[in-house]
Length: 68
Image (cartoon, one colour):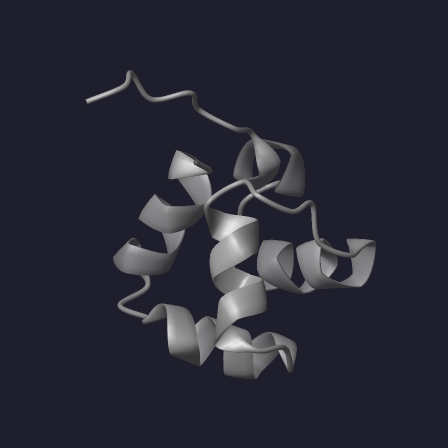
């Protein structure tokens, strides 16, 4: 999971659907990026960096959560 990306989105008061629309991608594609399933395109990371004002290297960091 990309915890930093999720936290930035939540702090901005945005839903996953709103961010997906901003990026002009499907909700599923955005969810896969946020969950760390797929990397996403550089142009999307550039837009996320502009949107949240956080360096994309921080946003891209994947946090491994312990198994439940």
